[in-house]
Image (cartoon, rainbow, N blue to C red; front, top):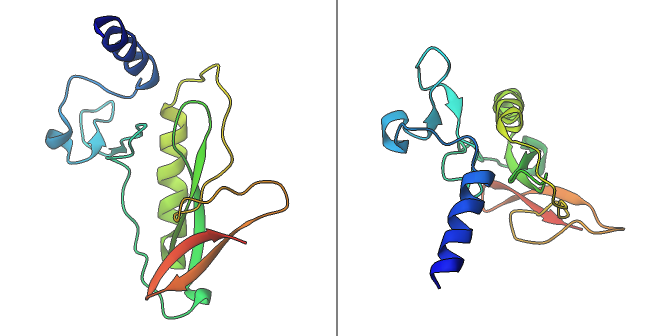
Length: 138
């Protein structure tokens, strides 16, 4: 059991290169920038620090989705949001992907917010569900 715990600790050290000595609460979900300000999005396997985006909608035409990298392997998740959030998402996602080290592991198919994978012949779509922009696979 100690060997497994040690292996997981080593793996976490390799997979979470964006972590530093500052605690999450000090930067409220962001990594400090080189100047020490808390402006960089946190990009971790658990995505605890990735920002939330406005998901409100009346119809699907109010929605777009962005593809967020969720690990250093390049696995991704499609996140639905109000179309007014697209530019903010794009800038945040670029900062996030720039933080990941490249791992020697395969990426999985993109997942939708309802947990489905966009495998061959299927595609991610965004819908307005209960006044929220959400992704699914069709």
